[in-house]
Image (cartoon, rainbow, N blue to C red; front, top):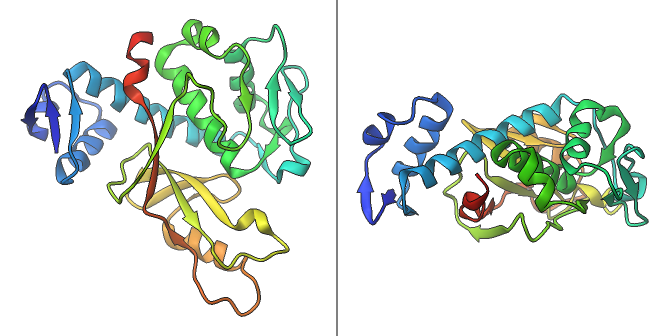
Length: 245
């Protein structure tokens, strides 16, 4: 359910102020869950909905960018904007524009290769840029670093256990019997779109069955366990950014 200023609000009431169909679907899902989503104002909810829409937009754009899936060992980036570190992470070059550099991944995707966790970080940084604008993004992320689940303190991410999945959430498919020869397929981090659609770098936008079938082909001989969607959700702390609208 949705609470605004401690009052339960029905989806129909919010539809009067929110015409975007994608965001209306998110509202409908929120009100259907027993989980309570609390906001001080309608504007706070609207910002989260915008951020979630921007997360899905960024995931779609990264999916068609031409960026390649690889492991940390073979990660590559555009040297014009990034220094490739020994651990496979990308560190923004001194003097480079954070917003220009992060958008370059979409513009020149073929110059980049990384694994799925870094892909999720890239999506969330781009969604942040779309949500707060270039000027504030450049101020917050002056030394942007892209590596696995290591986020800047100005992009606070929290994780919770539950199954109240919402479009724009980062979710996780686990593959407990992964092949030791391909340990990078021990899991797949994804962005959830709703309607059983997920974006995973290296897999594309697929339904859960396709992703699970793919991961099951990356298991050790004589496996005992199937891959599965975990009851774990990763979300930005959306309210943190309200100062930067």
